[in-house]
Image (cartoon, rainbow, N blue to C red; front, side, top):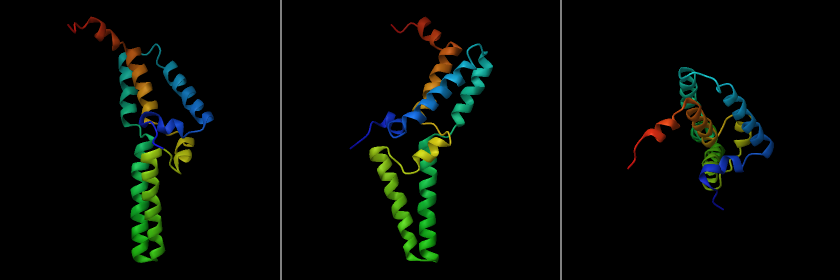
Length: 139
């Protein structure tokens, strides 16, 4: 079963953890309600550097594949199984959105790209970016 790309991390996260991320978003935004442009700009820059779940997976999985290959070549052929398992996990995540380490990453506070973008969009509204769209003539 294929999962929706934009929501697959949240769909495969427990409701309690999703609620924690929602609460954190509200807390984050409440800190910027009366912030000046420079402060919001700094937060937006932080969001540009924030690692999302996909980036953690894209880094962790190849490391495990490489480790399995290295150990398979130097220790025992059984270690090649680690590479196969890690590759299979990436395929599973790509197709279904589930990943065995997803609960660990989420408990560590790693957000989805969608959650990061939600904060980014709200900060842009607080900064007043939407006003530019009202005054621009698109005709």
